Image (cartoon, rainbow, N blue to C red; front, side):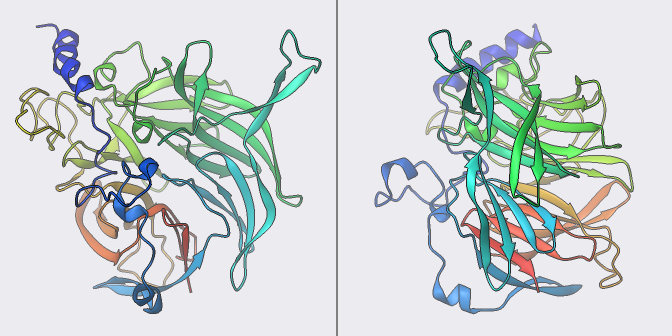
Length: 420
């Protein structure tokens, strides 16, 4: 049978049965009816306040091979869910980009303080036919429901941002990447150019947390990698005429893009390029179970939606409507590590060789958002040997580790944890 027809048949019913609860958004119990209606489809623990007992205890990354103490700060602004990324500007200055594209320049002292009030990611466009102005400001970010800013990447004074945007002509959403110039002394940013737009425009309904949008600089400072999810349209992933469910390699000098790998479901966790080993790593949310960490190789197919080590989110009495190739990965590139049950696998960061802790050198630290965990993953060559939980109780959205081995963790509870 034609493979495209087979996939279309499997997912015609899936589109009808689409549910908002996926690996990252998994809920341990039924929805809390006391929550506002707009929040009842989100994970319950996202909206729980920190308990006094938890905040009073010392916070430590605790491994059997060492510890590192953290200090908790609260963001001086509110971010929506799923929350946006941050960048380190040096000298305890940080730039935060919220889900809906507001930008905050901050400084860390006794507390995290705003240097400049947030502004939205915008650009100037020509005025309309009936406009009295030659140009007008357009907000770039489409942040309805779970859509919004997905990642950022600061290289020198250039800030690359991946976000969902609305195509008014096609009446659908796309994943966009734009470059902004960052003026650090004056705490300002300026739109520079659009780098990339996914195709096709996806009409509603779709799941905004499955668009991917993770960025990483590759083998040089003009090669950018971007992960694109399936937008909850899995039948489009194996279609070579779309960028859905693909890893894209972008040449920033020529502004040309190519499909680097395919078969990706929901790369909402992290994309990491290991410059020491020249390896590209991606963390990906599986369906029910089957969260993956993949070593991404050029031209390889990672199987979605044909195979997965997980299964599906299904309604009572319905089974196997995705087909019969789940709980295996035969015929496609296999993940380096799989998590069952799903942990809501998040960003990846590498611990450098600092002389502080030889046991952690070159290991990866990976967030488990749904599991409220931070894991240390032992790496030997291209093998990921084990995952050790080292910090519990925080839904970590973004991770950075500096050259001195200091951790910077941003959570979906508007918290910022920093090594002491």
